[in-house]
Amino acid sequence: AQTVTQSQPEMSVQEAETVTLSCTYDTSESDYYLFWYKQPPSRQMILVIRQEAYKQQNATENRFSVNFQKAAKSFSLKISDSQLGDAAMYFCAYKWGSNYKLTFGKGTLLTVNP
Amino acid sequence: SQTIHQWPATLVQPVGSPLSLECTVEGTSNPNLYWYRQAAGRGLQLLFYSVGIGQISSEVPQNLSASRPQDRQFILSSKKLLLSDSGFYLCAWNALPYNEQFFGPGTRLTVL
Image 1 (cartoon, each protein chain N blue to C red):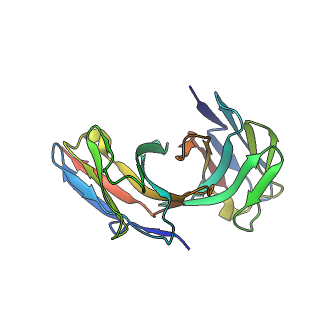
Image 2 (cartoon, chains in turn green, cyan):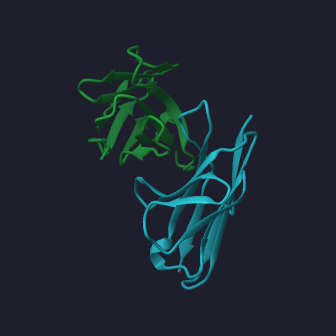
Image 3 (cartoon, chains in turn purple, red):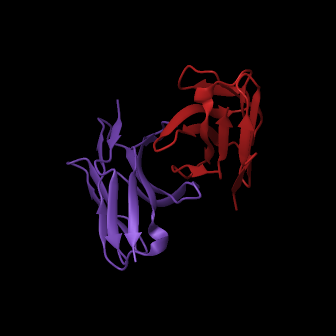
């Protein structure tokens, strides 16, 4: 069964600094997708970034980037120039091929200190 | 553009009462639809998903049921609520060519 592990229940970062959130996953599939979602205090789930497993290039969205290590089954999220609005719960998620379902990690709570 | 609506936003219900939560999607056709529950503190638990009208897949045995009476409408129901049904309920959709899921604003349910 596919599993997603986020080993850091909580992280903190100073405003304007950089922070990296970790995610590892277990799969025997070769065609899959990985995502990071952000859940601020409003509890709305917001897609931050997507990575296709067949792409070697790491995805980037403005201040958010990933380090995708397929062989190690690792998918970390780097947030640069952290802002107060980045404070949220961050979830890593996995989806394989034509499967309909996402598998989520348990989340990392990020605090941004002014 | 696509949008997803959920109502009500908050709900307080007594134990044993019925439940109906509604989710509708606009701006897309034939979406896959999903119901998740998030207990206080953490992760998301997939409850049901649907790939078409009348097609429901249940992920965990529980006190809840789901229905999809129209292409872009997904309903979560219960005949008799339990205390353990309290939580935050999220509806989501995805449609080709997207592989990611997009979430609604959620419903906060408290069962007393």
